[in-house]
Figure 1 (tube, rainbow, N blue to C red):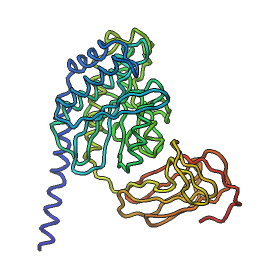
Figure 2 (figure 1 turned 30 degrees about the vertical axis):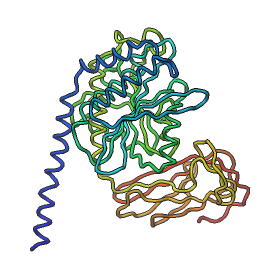
Figure 3 (figure 1 turned 45 degrees about the vertical axis):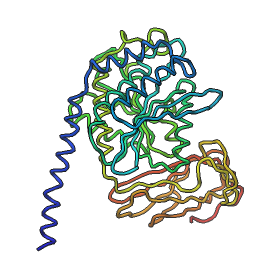
Figure 4 (figure 1 turned 180 degrees about the vertical axis):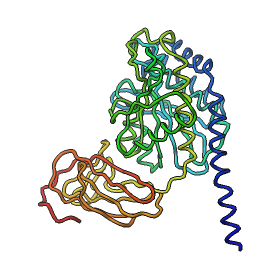
Length: 397
């Protein structure tokens, strides 16, 4: 009888929890304000051109720090040096029930000569608007709002930050990168947003599409394969899952002095902001049952005959000899198998986690290794390896 009562209570609670989650998202979406978004974009623009390293960029960073702090978030600067440049990222954190982290990011530096209203004042406006709303709610996973500098010089600020996260064992569930999302010139463009994603991150795109449909946001997703042109790439390079949202109609004013509020569309930006908010909130409360990562080889390490010899400042592993991979679970329920791939070709299987797999192909230079865990859910981990393996190929391991 007691078991029956427990089962009945669980069945009764599940719909209530699901409805409460949806009601929370609906409530938050109703608070997205076009006038506030416009004000944020205009404020960023009015600092003038603010390339990384300039006094204006420093002032934009101070504005963001103080704005995030006014929402009651934990805010910190992350100082970086990279490629002859230096700057600060601003990290605002809303603690969750656990330490697994969902990140939403944009960059606050502008291209030299440009005031950066669209690129990327629009993305920063989304971050601030979402943080202002979401800071009044609670979530299962920790949420971080990350404003990067150094993007226009080649994602310099995000490279250093993500390397830091990886080396400190941070569990990043996803990064949602928002960059140049306020310009449209056509009816079609006003109803589409481009999303760039690698294979492992497609589930984020799927959730965004579901959110747009469920909450009648009015944006369809124009899906692309991945293109390494935004701060999301820094996450992908370190084995994390990330997507890049960008407007559908190309803004010819980007990277010019004419990238101003006169050339943005607030109605479009408001739709984008609502989509980012719904996607972030959904992931931040999502229960995951299957998540994996490569524990070996480690990115930024050199191996000889399966022994880690020393560290290097690279977003790949260097392996001399055969690649010995170790896959570990972050979440693991009802695993059926783990499939191992080398440059997209299936090489073998394992049936328990954690699991080791030795890639026995003779190979040289840069390659991709990938593991796919399959159960009731599915997850992918992948990484780049620079390999020099002169050993003869062996039978499947």
